[in-house]
Image (tube, rainbow over all chains, first blue to last red; front, side, top):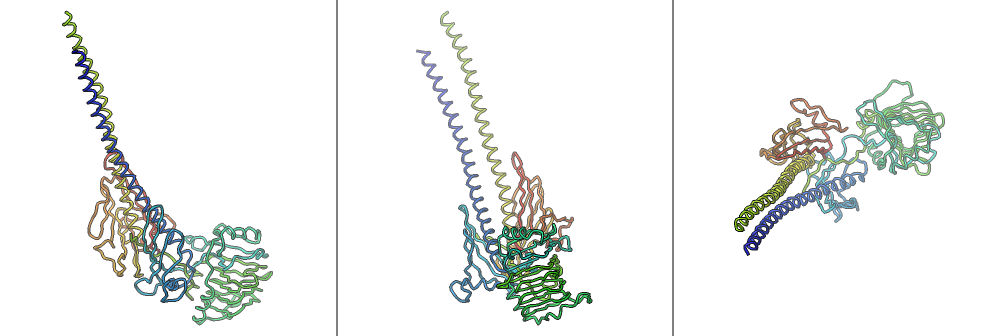
Length: 349
Length: 188
């Protein structure tokens, strides 16, 4: 009997010890679980917030990429119908995953700027962001050759040389070609032209770019009292300061000419001799270079849609070289179009 | 004799039982102690990671909105740029003026043993136990700008396109580090 009594007491102590140990362990596990659960919730919320912020940034960047090159931003305030005072004023088309609107920004109209409101949602997070959109302070130069349509096959039967390096080594290299087409298609065109095109190692790969606003540029040039083709001097003449020249219709260059500044040709530019230009050459009707003829541009060449003929037909030689200083000088004669850029952002909530 | 033998046997049994009990209790205490240590370490780790992450998020938040200038008044986003101190400005209410006493002027004082976020004139400690803290400034090419002893001048600050914060803190236990590079959203 005494043995049984002692045995019962031992079993009772062991049970109590086991229960205490179990309770303490359970409390520890519960505490640890609570700590981990809290951390997981916080991390999930933070990730959702950061994902939504990234989505808002991406939405703004994608929207800006759809805005045409230009000077003002007032057209954005008018909405899709382009008419002021209608219910769709300020409405914009945004990428999937976000919505937005545009409103007039406070302050003076110059420099051009508007307020962009973006509501972005992604992976459980949602952020409201206000952004200030303005125009870049430097002229748009997406490529040495900027065209409204991709060049047609066999456009270069002569030679075209591209040098994207600027005299200032700090300046970034410029793409050889910018056009509203997929970069892969532009690469394919360059490859198909084969030995007819030579690009220096400092020439960046072709890029997709919205077309240059050539019609509005010509309209602005008209208002700036430009000169005409007579401003192109014979080659070898003393260098003259940069000028703004506007040619209404086609321009044929039968001999050797030179010039600098901004040359705008509302029709086609037909090179039968040679033209050496420092600045920006704009040919709304495209460029034709006859066999044996030469067009050299230190700056940029912008080409429009010529209609039935090809925008670029080079039987002779076309040489393009980057010159930021020449583009800046042209911009000083007549403000060139700018890209729309983000000027600031504020998280609303 | 039989009773005496029984008494000796009981003593031995008691001693053995006590030894076994101590052994079991010792094991239990050790296990519980390890669990407690793990819990405390996990909590401390979580806390220090929280602190570091919150500091980085606050920094990111402030750099993102630096230079917000809806009136196009020509606001420079960075008012002061040193390796241990940064001042960011933004016209958050769109009145064309940056208030020095509101969150429109936000500074970071970054030096061991503390990282502080200064809103207007109010200093808020973001992280204690700072072992290392530094600010870097990157230009448009992503290259770090050389920072003179007195900080970047206005020309140098105008070249800033991104700001980096490198932070190492230890509050209890293992230190943790964060490096974050945040691009300015205000293109000049």
